[in-house]
Image (cartoon, rainbow, N blue to C red):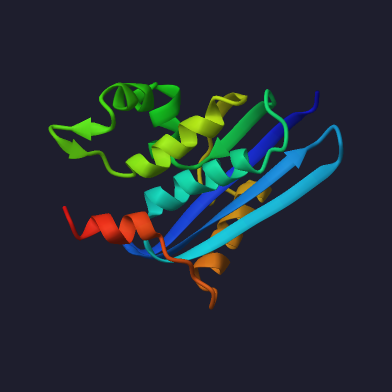
Length: 161
């Protein structure tokens, strides 16, 4: 079975503010490439970084794939590689009775993550890595598009904190 490489990036103009994500999926052995991007009217950079990963994983058609994800988000990479997200999950994403930020996305991430054999590699952003630079361009363009989606969970819950 072919291995998949996913590059991801998120962007927010203001934090919170309008934002977007960009994802590039590669199956080098098959010569396949796919780009994904979406923009949102009110969100955060961390949400977009995580959503970029989620959408990349959700785009995979078959389960059990070998996946290498490159991200410039320490938030995402450390949460997974240091297994923080598993500890959060054990506590039902609650921290002292309050829901942990981005719990909705972390739950969604874990569903897709568990369908594959996934490893993460942190990379420095804006360091000239072509696919990371492409993801950044996709994320920024999505954030600046005229068709911004509503990050419903974020908008409904950010004002209730």
